[in-house]
Image (cartoon, rainbow, N blue to C red; front, top):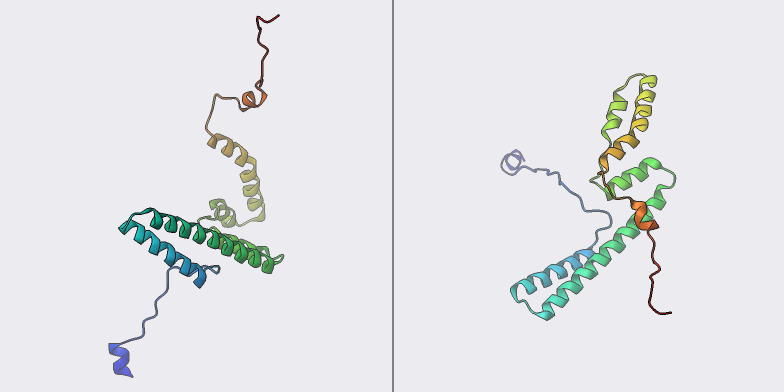
Length: 158
């Protein structure tokens, strides 16, 4: 065994990404078909290959959307009233959402009084920060809504 372990050791690799819970073999076959028709159209561009490619793209998108909806609907029902599990599910669905850096500031405070002040300070200033992030505009949005839709014109007919 020492010789085998020395020359052919078992190496455990950690996968970077795992397949989402909604991904299945049916979707994989649709993706394969979509890629097949994409390659076929790229190699031999004709109307038939283009229509089959576009059809395969549409069917793949529809199936993916349906699988995602069903998976997350079922997962939310399983969570029940567990808010921690719901947030974990939300982060799984939208992995690009990051936790706010303000939480780290609040957690770094040691006293409850300081934490409360940090939270109050955040909510007292968030409106002003959001308002400054909106670009200035000279246009009044109410003008379009309240603009007259008709006007009376003088005519020569008497």
